[in-house]
Length: 423
Image (cartoon, rainbow, N blue to C red):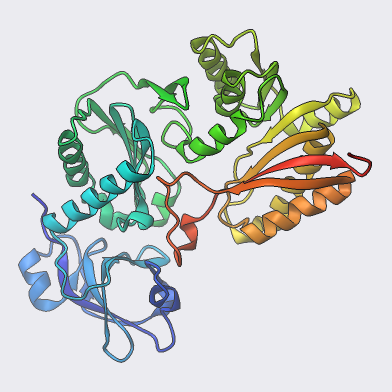
C-alpha cells in the first residue's frame, strides 16, 4: 500500500514567478519561492503530526499557491535540489494516493499501446508522463527502472507493481526488474546512486527484436538503461536508404544503426566507436543477425578516424552520425557547437555526390535552432549543398511535453548531400 506523503505545508510563489509552471511545465525552482508555510523537520516526524502542524520532510508533497493565494496544485518538495518542487498535479484538491498513481500508470501504458511497438519501449518518461523523475523501460519481458527524484523514489516499487498488474491484463508477464538509478542527477537531489535487482535475480543479458533486428541488451552494464529506445523509428527510417549502399556509422555504440543498414541490404557497413566493450557487443549483435560478413566494427575515436578516411579518399553512400551528448549544461554549449560542426563537416566530405547524411543531437541544450544553424555552417565549410529528406525527433514512447523543454532533446535530420556541381 502507498503511505500518503501529503502534508498541509504550502509553498508560496513570488509575484511574477512560476512562469514555466503557468505555461504547463512541472518544475518550480528554488529562486521562484517566496515562502513556505510549514517546517522542514527530521524524518522522525509522524505523518499525523505533519498534517496537523504543516511539518514536512524532503520528498513529501506540499501544496503550491501563487503569491495571491491562488491554488496551483501539489508536488514533491526537496530543499536539497535547485528544482525545489516537481508537480504531481495541477488540481489543488486531488489526492495523491494509490488510485492516483494507478491512473498515471494506466494512462502511460495505454498511450504506448496506441503509439509504438510495445515489445520493447519506454513505458514511463518522467515529467512527460506526469510522474516526475521516473523512467521505466521495457525490454521484452524485463523492466529497467531509473529513479532520479527523491519524492518519486519512495513510490517506485509501488509503481512497478502497478505496471506489472496493468500489463498482465494484456497477457504480458514480466520476469524481472532491474534498477539503474546510477545517474549523477541523484546527487543533486541529495541521494546516493544505486543499482540492483528489484525482486528476484535473472539473466541481465536480455534478447530483444526491434525493426526486425536482433540484439542482446545488457540491462546491468549497458549505457543508461541498457539500450537507446528513443532512436527506434529513426533507425527504421535509414533502412530505405541503405540497400546496396556503402555505409559508415559513427558512434555506433552496440551497432544499432549499422545493423539496420545491414539488414536492409547494405553492400558494406563500417561501425565505429571508441568503446571496446560497445564494439564487442556490436560484433556479437552482428553475428546474431548473420551479418558478420557485411557489417564490421572498429574501435577508434571518430574525431581521429574521419580525417584519416578523408585523406584516404574514402566515399560512402550513407554516413550516419549519432554522437553522445556533447553538452549537458548551458555553460559548455560553445564547445559542443564546435564538436557538432566538426563531425558534420567531416561527415559531409565523406558522402559521395547525391549520397545521404543522417545526423542527430541528443542534447537538450543543443536546441533545434542551434543544431540546424550548426549543420548549415558545416555544409558551407565543406562546400556542400544539403537537400533535406526529413526531420525527426525521438520515438513517441519518449513524448515531448510542451512547456517541459527537458522532454525535447533528440533532433534527427536526413539530408541528401550534393557538391556545388551536382547534379
